[in-house]
Image: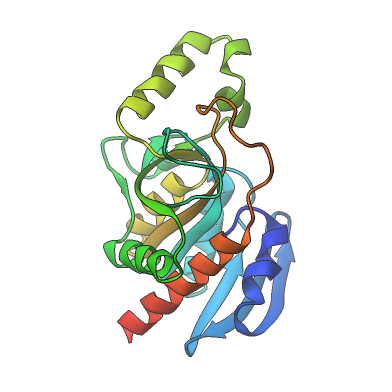
Length: 228
């Protein structure tokens, strides 16, 4: 489940017999096979509301496992541009998942999905981290908090997440995890660090997508084999 519709065919071309099966608004879907299992690649668009809709409707079509594959902003000093992050849990700093369960309920990935993604990254020799990510609603509230009326609150919360060891910030994982869990389905996530505003002088060139796409497919391959 990438956010960007443009990344759907890039992921799907790594499957057998890939073909587009649907396209509506931000949701573009391609289907194919991997290790004999049917796989659908569907974009979620930006943010938790549309990601939750994608999980709901894909589950209604028979999907039992959801993997978020996207980009994120690093939050720790050792989380560098180009690194991968396997998201074992997500901070619910967004407004969609509370429509399902109270905030005391954790947004946690399925352990089998998490293990498969970690093993996939290891097998390909990709630099990666495993831990908690931050899911938010406001992109510019993170990037330019100083110009928001609630700047002090945003900065205090951001610093708290960093001190707690949160690895990176993105915009979909929490809702995907909570909605999937409420549907008794599995979910996990793999993110590519595309920037890190905490690192002064960090490189500005775009991170290559190939490690993210290859890592996601290798992780899924291992999950399918383990299921078998």
